Length: 81
Image 1 (cartoon, helix red, strand yellow):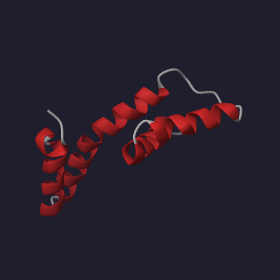
Image 2: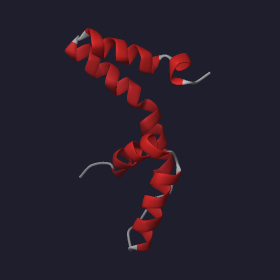
Image 3: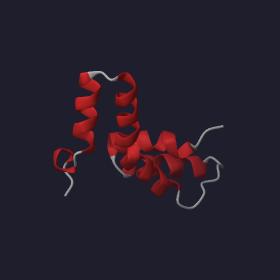
């Protein structure tokens, strides 16, 4: 079994907070149990995803992967502060 927040983090990245929340609401309505903080956990995983990609880039050593990882880790390029 894996962490369901991983699946939700991709939804968060693709469509913002509304998409994983809609998924969780539907899951609850179908009888599933959603633990408190699952949506926040998904957001945190999405926010940390550039670190995982950077580890991948270091493993491959490919210039394009390294450049992409550097851009992902740069908050100015990503739109952060």
